[in-house]
Structures are given as structure tokens and as C-alpha cells.
Length: 182
Image 1: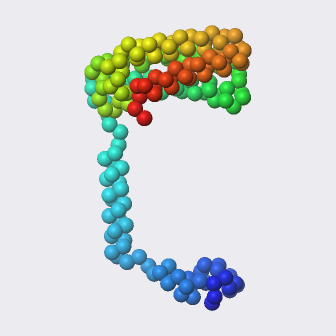
Image 2: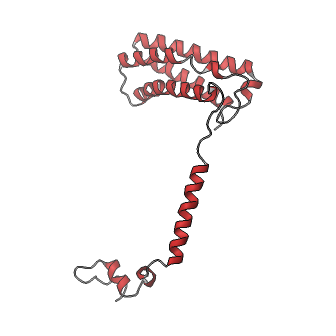
Image 3: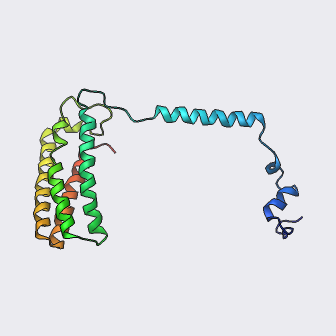
């Protein structure tokens, strides 16, 4: 059979090429040695996966885990606001409710940045504790921006809301760039 020849009725071209000897290795079964190697590789991958699990926060009160959870809670409120604006589906009432929810959640993480909380699993850079005045300035900028976001949401005007949302977003990004590991 030559390459590109039509397959016999009821056969696929690849099957007929394998059966004709064109691809002889595809007709062979796995040897016991290759099965052993495959099993060994799977076991090694499983062990590596178990070793690379996230580091747990074992300190009393789990301050790192607590602040990470608080930031995630804020993100669960903040991100839907941005999605609403980016997708052109602005709903003034829903946005205002999310802004009020953000106001309730925005205080939570900050008290968990104590001097003794720079250890794994933190993603914070040591600069937070070396540049406390800059970190505090960024924190205050976030509060100012979210106050403006809440006020803009109350006006229900899309232009004001977009401007305030992206200003708040920029404060988050500036702080992360300066103080968060990638």
C-alpha cells in the first residue's frame, strides 16, 4: 500500500497503514519494562505534587492566612464591579450595593500586617515593614479612593462611577507593585 492510497472499505486510513507495516512500532504492545517506567513516573509525579502543596500558616491566630482571606473577600466584591463596567452591563443599584459591601470589608486585612508576620505563606515583600510610612500612605490612598467610589456609586452616574472605580483599582495596583511578590 502506498501513502495516500484509499483505505479498504470499513477501515480508516491510519489503521490500514499500521496493519500494512508502515508504522510498525504502533502495532507493538508495552513491554513490562516500559510499564514499570510509566508507573515509576506516575509515582514520582504524585510525590512531587504532594511536596509542592501550599505552606500553611501555623502561627497563633494565623495572621497571614487571615489577611489573605480578607483580601480575597474584598476582591470578590471589587472584581464584579469591574466586570460590570468592562462588559458594558452597568447596573446602578447592584453597583451601589457592591460598593457598600466593599466599604464593610475594606478594614479587615490591615491589622494583620504585624511586624512578626513576614513568613511563608506571605506574598508580602519585606519592604512593607521597612517602609511603613509608604505602606501607610498607600493604604490611606486606597481608603480615599474607595470613599470616592462609594460616593460616585451613590450618584448612579456611569461616568463618575468608572472614573472612581479605576482610580481605586490604580491604588491597588500601585501598592501591589511596591509591596507584593509576584
